Image (cartoon, helix red, strand yellow):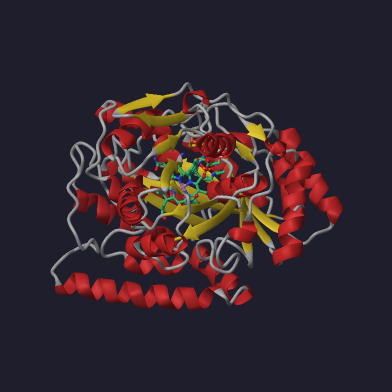
Length: 491
Ligand code: B12
Ligand code: SF4
């Protein structure tokens, strides 16, 4: 009989205390990496299953109970920094109840801090650094057949009390060799995984990573899992995935989660032409750098169903863009957003607040910027120095910092720039969002969107009620912002 592996996306705090109402409108994308791993394990004869804690409403104890009920031989947990402590609790619970079960960890946190993580938490038996499909299969085979763990590249393992770290794995080149992600193993797919409100025209929705890797080094970004070399599925394979999702689950909207969807113009052109030739009425969204879009490719993307492009605009201050090592400047961002808008594609601006060097003036520059560009949706995160990002090393060296991992969800200020306070940042945060969303043209756009897609209404009503409650509670407690708990920053 085949051995069972249970893959876990752990629960973690998705919002800051005081902002719980945000849950009603936020993204619930599944851990795509686990779908890739499950498909690969299944193809090699293992009985794979997935636990999606958030979508299934499971806290750490409930996840442990689920694992203990199924008593798998292997448990694989995907680690974002924000989910490490929850995963430790789960792994400890599993080890206490099922001492023979092997706990394997992987994911972005492990790719940057694998060794330190295993050193610190002995409930994790093994860690896989980087892309996991081949490493996992080799590892399971070795564990079953008594093979040599020292021969599996990218693996961190224990030999007695010592930790061994094998050389890193050559980067897999041909993604087409991988089996299709195992959407069929995802609990409640597709209904349980809606994107953020107003971030899709209609469901059901699925995510696809059509390429991996990014050659840039923006200082806040953790690229340790996929590295600098961009590799992609062939356009034919991507279209095949979309057809499969549409035929089997009626998926009508795809969110591409690639770091650089537009890395190759030739590939995107080929993909759009194939989609058009197929005549499938699918819409899709992707992420792009402002310096990769031009009016002609945008026109083709629009015809092929592109509904929204997310741009990492970050800030309205060129001074900060330089500090972040971003190649483009505000003027280029403005051009790209204008072209995209003119092509009839929605634009989503990804911004952050609180980067080192942020001041009241730079916040003002961002406010002016978002008020003058034809952007449709603004996503504002609170700057967080993630392990694996160059800025983390600049700020803290390579020393492991575990104290704030739980808060590293982009919704907490775990760092304050020189001369600013958390309260100032929190007020700036609210003001920026309010300024943007209260613009008449933005409100009109959302009103039209709601009329066309009334499914958003229920989520919006829950959000509005939650916000009113949070505001009342903060006033009653004498606070000026919504933050319900003080967070001491790292610096
Ligand atoms: C899609 C995405 C999301 C989605 C889905 C999240 C998810 N659980 O996968 C959503 C939108 C929910 C999300 C949220 C967040 N994200 Co995000 N997200 C991504 C993105 C763009 C793509 C991830 C992806 O699907 N990759 C494709 C799959 C195939 O790869 P993968 O998941 O990494 O899995 C592979 C390997 O990691 C490994 N692996 C993974 N797990 C395991 C487990 C085992 C046992 C093994 C053996 C191997 C293994 O094998 C897999 C297959 O090769 C990445 C950027 C990137 N390039 O990775 C950021 C990224 C993962 N996100 C990041 C962050 C910080 C977040 C947030 C925590 C904060 C934020 N910035 O918004 C939030 C959480 C917010 C919240 N409030 O919920 C950081 C993580 C940094 C870190 N050290 O934690 C990244 C790397 C962005 C960046 N460049 O800085 N995210
Ligand atoms: S922010 Fe985007 S362009 Fe910059 S390093 Fe990260 S993935 Fe690459």
